[in-house]
Image (cartoon, rainbow, N blue to C red):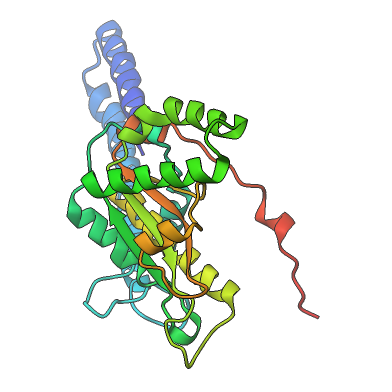
Length: 289
């Protein structure tokens, strides 16, 4: 539309200049009435017609968008129970594509509000769960609680690797390198799985692990929407009896599936993270016959 307006103005300018020179050279004032006026009217009609066409298209598009916000079995946007309208498919996919694992080296040391952590955990709680066993459990650590857990991890690692061993020395070197980065993490969330939340309905272990992973994905997506930096790590002696007990995992089959590192990072650092995926067409086989 802007190009059309510019073209119209350019045409009017050229016509005006030509007409002025013609009238000056031929001393013909009536030329303006006979020739210039119809040209100006024609150009204005074209511009107005174009504007009407675009306004009509805009109104039609908005009406279509409003219509698709209504609940229907045809794949249109769904109205939620609280009266709100579900996000568009484009918004949902956009959030999923925006999710990134942001590493502590890029955190700024500040902490997200407690409300944000609670929203992330609430999102996790709505993960799919076969048999409604809801096996996910979370232990949120910050401040002194986080320090105690990290020291416990260190003591268990020292015992497992052996004080003075080459592996232990390498562990110490890595620990020293990562010390400043770990200090920027405001919260550690232990991702836990209760093996038997309902003794009368024990599901296959892989299904319970998948449910916990789905909960973490929900939590990560909410963190992305809130602008909170985080990533899921699986290193360390997370299967040791000491750490399992610390996390309240005292029954047979209970597991700690990793640690969710949480903090804040400058938006420009988070936006600098890039990701790609191979074409989905290469990962899907359609069987229709």
